[in-house]
Length: 286
Image (cartoon, rainbow, N blue to C red; front, top):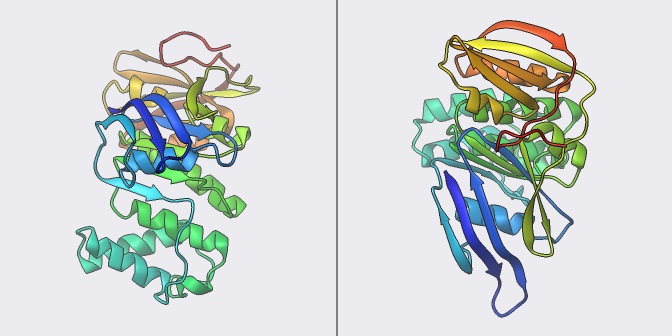
């Protein structure tokens, strides 16, 4: 489990950007970090992935491999998107053929406008963001950290990114992302944390859900804990080897795709009255 205990960060002798941050992120969890611009969200993510060290406290249990999309991704490369990703894949241990195939698959799924052979420096901001996402996914991550990942993406790619986040979690990976929009954090995360005044607190309330769906899963063991951590999930129960999942209707397609990719079988899907969300301690949230 990725754990932060008493973590603080400041640069030089400046003011503390973050103070006394405690956070636990188990496998299969999708967590969102929100807060105003300059609140320390990016600083926290850089410490989560290990590119920056805390000034105080400790971080333990960081899983490997890590996929990371920073808030600023360099787009001045003369290499094409495909060549750039193939090179990174080789650096990370893939063969040239495997890296090229994985890169091509990701760019196709993300619908890169201009094609995979377009130089990075000629891509729009939204398409550069797609390449940034692809590089984080070349090796399937056990920890996926995304800084404002929806920034600049077209509407179609918004849905694809939601599917990818759900798939990583369904496979047991931990996902952490930042976004300042409540609609995005609520729709795509099982936990939402707020940074305010340099301190991190968990938001314990979720908005009412107008419509929900029931999904009955089997074939991958009793993974109710894993299912509960997926975005949009409201409640889970396990009985006779089957996992029954109540999910917000808008997230049903993403959950189904993630479950199938993770090796589960879908036994039944039907619309139901909405249920109250359940927090990580097993109590209903209000």
